[in-house]
Image 1 (cartoon, rainbow, N blue to C red):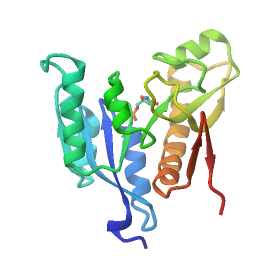
Image 2: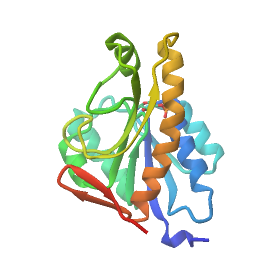
Image 3: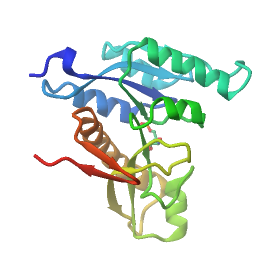
Image 4: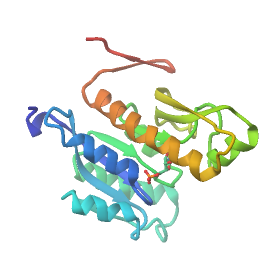
Length: 208
Ligand code: GRF
């Protein structure tokens, strides 16, 4: 069992449902998990994931993104909240905000995102419908480091799923989401344990 003081402190940023956050919370319950979730932050007060976090006994914070005089000023306040929480790692989990370069720089190599597509295909929104429209036979999800360019940071992990003839946006999203929950927890554990090596655009996993 790993002592709590040795576990990396993770802040998860959400805007909605929070199923990825929940998967990360579940994985953190293992005694040897190298991270603990110490804060769940949302820009949306009604985000469903906030309730899930509270039920799990995790501290939550909310700061509505409106009325701060712009993106930079808002992000600075969020940075202050994360610093006050002594976060070591920041995890974006359905956080529906474009973040500023200053915010990204503050967490370089320590901020992860999950994207519901096999990057570099289908960056941005509506990935499942776009995958169906493009007729791809494989779709999936990607965990990557966050850099200033949207959905373009170094890739840590990916999982693919087949696209079936009878798929709708919903059925495909459901199949991908199951994989998201699996690879996000694995990637976060690897980062927290110091098992990821970043060289240029490539991420290598330390062996042994
Ligand atoms: C996920 O599909 C994730 O890949 C994307 O936003 C969605 C968030 O879902 N970035 P949830 O809030 O984790 O359930």
